[in-house]
Length: 150
Image 1 (tube, rainbow, N blue to C red):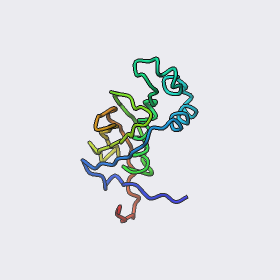
Image 2: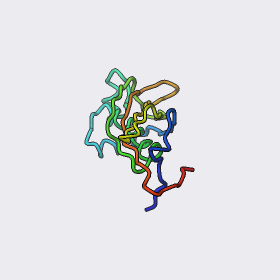
Image 3: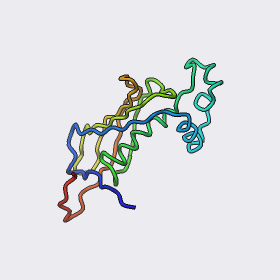
Image 4: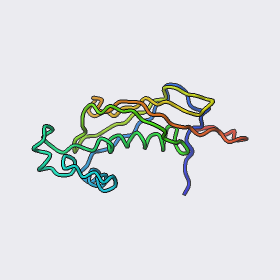
């Protein structure tokens, strides 16, 4: 399988952003429940969820936040990066039918260690539902590689 390369550490700059969007569907929630083993009925059972303060099913917080992992691994920094840490605050849930947009922004770069701090958030209808910070290890440019990211 061929991968488009991500950004090398020396190509990153403060303020760089990437985003990804996902529709919250019942199929996605059920699949995430199977993969994670989290079958909390507030996520997977509409009848049960209707009896809760939310009044309807909500997506797993980790499912929604997984969009951030997708950005870090696919786009910014991208393939070859390693997700090291995260600190997130879940402010509101995502519901079935919501369209979630995740955004990651380069906030700090430690050239010596290769560590990059990212400011992250997930948004639904213009409202931030998750916010926080993540740390990644960005790939360093291989010796002799003079290519540029296009």
